[in-house]
Length: 461
Image (cartoon, rainbow, N blue to C red):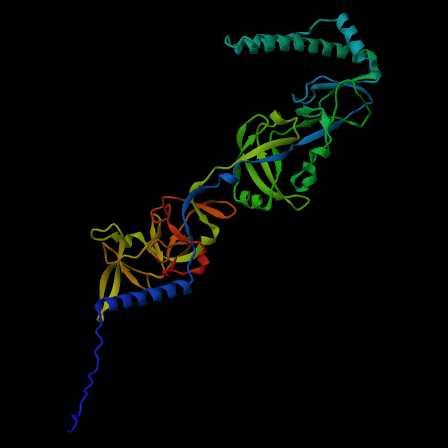
């Protein structure tokens, strides 16, 4: 019996694609691409704007040197000196200032002379009457203790006047052994020298500020002096200066200003003064703070400790590395207007559509504005673009630019130039004004290094 031939027919198998698998595969591919992009794309470092101030560098204290117009006077004779005007007092020309006695017996002679003739002259009485009149005119019953101060002052004046009368008699009697000397100039009298009398700003050097090597020679009644030796000096100008040592950074800062506010640490007095920066004999920087008053208040002080009080600037704090300079197109405000329901500023810009010139209302991002103009990025207009005024047929051709400093804002994922107004600076940061209509706001994100990006660049964070 014949075997039947079996015929086997093979059919092509069809792959049944499940929709879920397809979607899963597409998502996987998308994720893979993004992972590759994430690890291969260089990301831009950003900084979140915070508030800040320059308080750290404000109110710095300095040890200053007083520079005055000081005239040193020398003894005309040798002998024992006696002074008759208190140090720090104002004297006029020919005021009886001191006497020189070659014997050293002045006190004995004064005592004997005052006993012989203890009377006051009519001029002396007029002087006392003037003092009493001034006291009566300024009497304050609420300040009773002043009575005792006045009594002491009046008593001292009487003694001085009697002594002066006696001195004149002694000078006549003693002849060559005794001389009365008058002030050679008008000013504030000081009985001390320290070799700083002729100091000028150009002669300043760091060693002059060393108090350990400072020598102040004081004179007092009863000491013996030789002819030609210095015995007193007068300060005859109300204008004086305080020299302080500056770092290079401080010198740069104060070169930009003409005046400062200072506080005297000795007594807390606060005032304003002029300032200039100079280089001294040692080529270092010094600040010269010039005042037109208070000289007599500190006239006995060569070293004056002061504090320069800087106004504390508060605003937004941005890194110095963020700052860039950029040219912006200048557009007069008469060509801008709010359009439709938007409060954004737009411009009528001429465009060519299918060969025909027409106007479109265009809203570029405004980088800054002042009372006359808007300023926009050069990336948002073409040089030569034509704008038409809102309420007239006048036209303005884009082209004029102005340079500004600012930062790149990346809040929207791409760089937008924002102009900043710098108020102050610290070592690493600028303090910029807060509240400008087109300026930075608190917590804005800006590019940390502005030199690494350009306008309208997409940013990966």
